[in-house]
Length: 347
Ligand code: SAH
Image 1 (cartoon, rainbow, N blue to C red):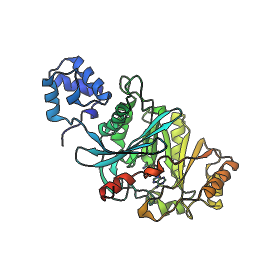
Image 2 (cartoon, rainbow, N blue to C red):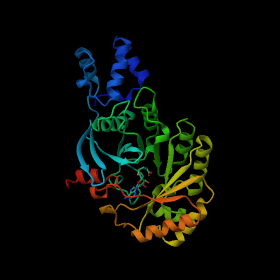
Image 3 (tube, helix red, strand yellow):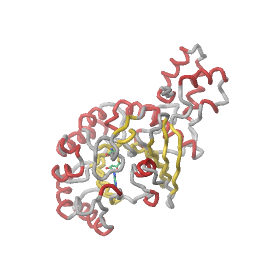
Image 4 (tube, rainbow, N blue to C red):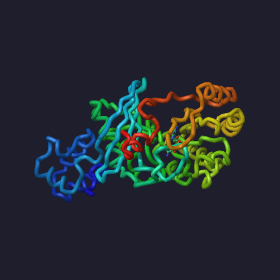
């Protein structure tokens, strides 16, 4: 496999140009072209001798859109192929305040959450920071965005994979995507979602990149959480809440809990009561979403009425909570479903 130029930050690109005995301004030109989502082969500002040199060692297109699905609500879902044939997904969502890109951080996932399609085949490999960055740059360019007028204004790390299980590359990605002179998306407009890898949550709090932290909770107590999330056998909810408080102290950012409503599993009145007790008085918000059903799992979404009732119980109990719209459900909205379908030849 060739190397990935987007893995290099601006300083590393400068060092590469020194090594190749190229002038300093070439590093700026290459960086600018990459940030615009251009392929090296298409770049008009570089001499072909330099392009040839780069392309001998580096991928021209590290992530390639091989399939796009459009939803009636404007959501777009992409299947990307990587240079080794790996498949990941990305989603582009339009909101009033800007457009959000949902990126993948791993090919597959090893967390084993029972309701999630991304984990069905296990973990294939980690993405590099440059591959994750390329998902954003490619989609920004696809919609006609550049560095002044960005079409991707917000990022969520909620695609395939567990971001904190690929810690080093994900942190490098966060630094590169928010760097001045690049696409420069502020950490405040980035949300990182984790199933609750406690040590890495502490480490992230100390990085000085104040992204919004989202934790996939999905249950109000350890026992029920263990039934749907194997990671709950390793870290308790109490440990997770302690790490969230540390994150809040370090960054000043309110944290968010994701809670997918699964019929008969986590959303009766008893669960609501426990959740209120657990989270009362914390600087947090609860994002409810009705489960996106995944064919393989035999878990079913809560009815709309049940979901509304659960929401009311939380807000009556004093929690800040919302029931999220399910965007893109008509295009197999749940993460991992497009990839799984393609792999099995169902598409
Ligand atoms: N691994 C990370 C991020 C990926 S998933 C995490 O666990 O947070 C992004 C969010 O979608 C998580 O909250 C995850 O629990 C949720 N999710 C996964 N499968 C889902 C499904 N079928 N329906 C609804 N939400 C789902």
